[in-house]
Structures are given as C-alpha cells and as structure tokens.
Length: 252
Ligand code: HEM
Image 1: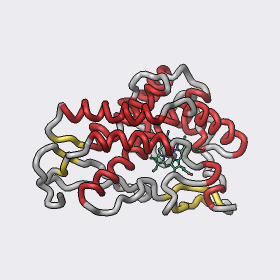
Image 2: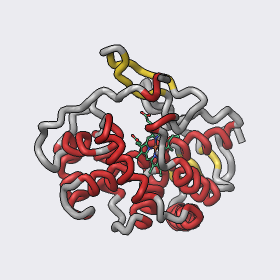
Image 3: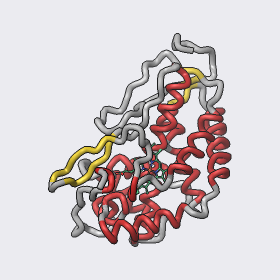
Image 4: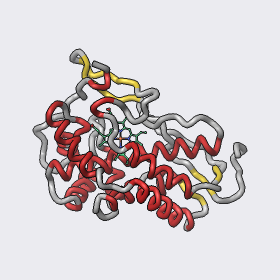
C-alpha cells in the first residue's frame, strides 16, 4: 500500500447537524472505507456534467469584468477565490455563493476552530444547497476544496510568469493515519494527489485557472512585495497585487 492510499485521520462523527464539524464529518475528504467511496461518488457525479470549456470561458469573462473596474488588483482576494468558486457554483446550478465559501474554506481543515462567521456562512450555504444531507455536503465540499487550492494554482502560476521563477504546487502535503499515527505525506510531483483520493476536480481546476490567467495577460506586478501564506502544507501568495500599468517591480 502506498502512503497516499492509507486512511485519513478520522474526524468526530457525533457533531451538531449543519456545523463546520458536520461538514467535515459528511464529505469524502475526511472519510474512510465505504463512507469515502459513497461520498466521493456523490462529488464525482456532481462534477460529471460540468463542461470544462465553459468553465474556462466563464472564468475568463468574470475576471475580465472585475479587472476592468480596478487600477490595482489583489489577485488573491479579488479574483483567485471568488471567480473559480462563483463559476463552479453556477455550473453546479447554484447562485454565486463564493462570499460564503471563502470563510468556510478557511475553517474546513480539522486543526482549525471555526469562528461564528464561518458557522453563519455554512448555515447559508446549506440552505442554498438544499438543506443538510450528504448530497449537500458533497456540493459544498466541491466548492470548498476548489477555493484555496485553485487560488493557489492561479497565484503561483501568475507569480511565476511575472517573475520568471518556477511555479510551486499549492498543496505540498496531506495527512494520513499510518501504523496508528497521524503523519504528513508529501505530495511533491503529484500536485493533485494520487490513488483512491486523488483530486476529482483537477481538469476543472486547470480550466478555471487557465481562463483567469488568460484574462490577466498584460498585467504586471506592482512594487508591493508579495506575502506568502504561512501554513507548512501550503505554498501560495496571501496577496498578489498587479496592475495594467507600466511594470514597476523590476522583474518584468
Ligand atoms: C475545481 C477545483 C477543485 C475541485 C472541485 C476539487 C475537489 C476535490 C475533492 C472533492 C477532493 C477530495 C477527494 C477525496 O477525498 O476522495 C480533492 C482532493 C484533493 N485535491 Fe482537489 N479540487 C480542486 C482543485 C484542486 C487544486 C487546484 C489542487 C492543487 C493543485 C487540488 C489538490 C487536491 C489534492 C492534493 C487532493 C487530495 C488530498 C489527499 O489525498 O489527502 N485540488 N479535491
């Protein structure tokens, strides 16, 4: 058995309905065995009818619209999260719930204690997705999984293309329970994971990122330094300021 096909560290299952803890306990990402197989199938089935070319086109159009109204764009806050999540939500037949997905994504992983804003955002998301059920959790799970990871893909590729530095992968490692211990398993060289839990949204993520990056062609870094997210298993800009104007970074 490869480390990536080992079980994930389990999350508590006796949790209040409709909370962030309930979301974790109801999605494929933190499930094992038959629960994982069934919940993963719900996510894969929800993604199956989505037209990836339309995702790319819509991401291009939304990004162009947002960027047209701004002199300086913080790609991470203004575009890299709301555009992919909004476009994917629309493709899943949902309203643009991106403003609620962002705080839930920040509270999704089990080491984070969700704040009241994340819980309130999840309550609205559950209502928008049809009430608390495994199917609803699967749809919210897709949007939440897409949020920071696709933002990382966009931020890293854009930073690399503007600086000539290599683009790192956004998700550097994941967790597994091996020999009774919770361990970090590196994802070097497999940015979308591998095995039975490999990312089911990789084609969708690449299409969304491609549409966004096409729309940002011709933009340049500003003179503000790019800060990076300070989590050991993630590598993505916290902010990435670009402008349509003359290059001022010295890189371009
Ligand atoms: C449209 C965008 C995306 C969607 C809908 C999506 C969806 C998902 C879902 C539902 C899972 C859980 C699969 C399971 O547990 O069986 C997953 C896992 C994963 N995703 Fe994505 N994802 C997206 C973008 C990305 C991006 C951009 C990356 C990184 C470049 C990424 C990397 C991963 C990795 C590494 C895993 C596996 C984690 C592990 O094995 O522990 N995803 N994704």
